[in-house]
Image 1 (spheres, one colour):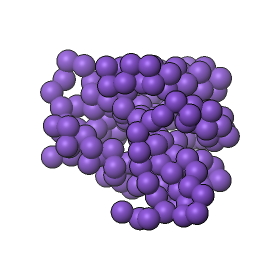
Image 2: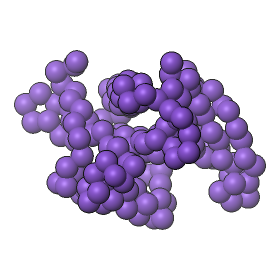
Image 3: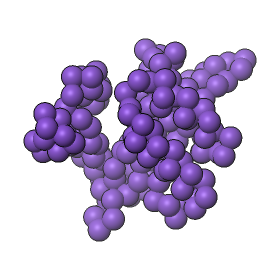
Length: 164
């Protein structure tokens, strides 16, 4: 593993840093930010029983700092299908391979946990263009498009990747 990047489990002290990253990314509205923090709180309080698994990534040699996180979990009533709920990289640390590193980590962990498929939902808005291209570059295919899902003119895109 790259000595500058280290993935670990979520800790209560991470909440404020996660909030900073989600806000500073400029990609999420107030309700989405609130939802992200609710998932953090639930995962801290209930652990694995919450159904939300967090992987936080620290980056840096001398003074490692939390620079990204992913939140994923098994989808109830399925056999081996997982959702990637959130993947966020600190804007100050973009273009360092952190997003790809986190995504690959999640894929490996899902396989270790008996998962066979990973789904990712996102918006069709132009502001999500880089996100969509990121998923496509990493082997995800558009599996579904629900027109006007979030609001008129904002479709829900569901990407999938078979892991096994």
